[in-house]
Image (cartoon, rainbow, N blue to C red; front, side, top):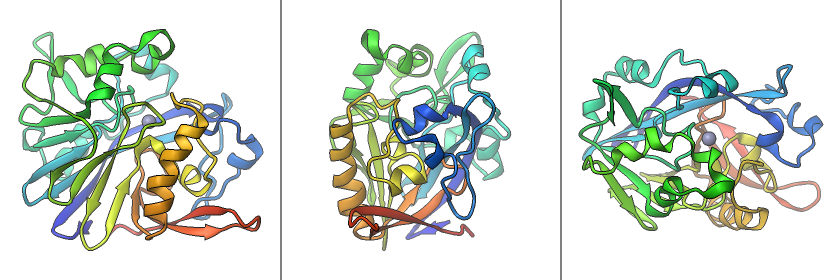
Length: 294
Ligand SMILES: [Zn+2]
């Protein structure tokens, strides 16, 4: 997809399943399981109450370098693969190859946060040792998020269980770039802190003639973007903090100005346009319109 003088590629790292109740928190199942997106009902559950989630990384070919947003799902731990029914068909490496890229072509990696379903290909095992997969890249991570992943404490230990394998080897390799707050990576591409899902979570803004927001797990699926109160039970911070972040960026800026929106986890489609609407109760909502990718 052309976006100004950039080219965007959607690179799949396969699919995983997540517990539906975890994904939609206090929303009743009869609403989310039959929720319609583009004429489909993507949040239908299997017999274990799981819904299917995608892991669609975004590669941006920018005149100043190649930026990879997210590195797919952790699959170095067998139990995690089994529990989440991870199927890598294709894997990020296969998707990159099909698009004509190799890991050494990547100049910047952005991890929105450091949960295992976003950092899977940060590292690879070579000669029995873990090393950064994208050896020529700088991995752009919020310092707050890195610190949390290294020292999550009792309550968040499981959320960052893969950090020792997927994050720690970056330290000392010369590839780690810890940032604090908003930062422009290349002209038109910025990271912006969006605390809620995790305390050091960041989103990505891509600006050309129009703006695209990659909200990551601040509002992971179409329903999270359309329904202001819809959030995940997995969010580390509370409802009020999540709402503050979501309102400020997703509704007051993105939906207000009909920005493009990119989805990592949504299976229905990856790129939409978010509009602000008023529902029948007179409350603000978002409405996401699918964008056909040519
Ligand atoms: Zn996620």
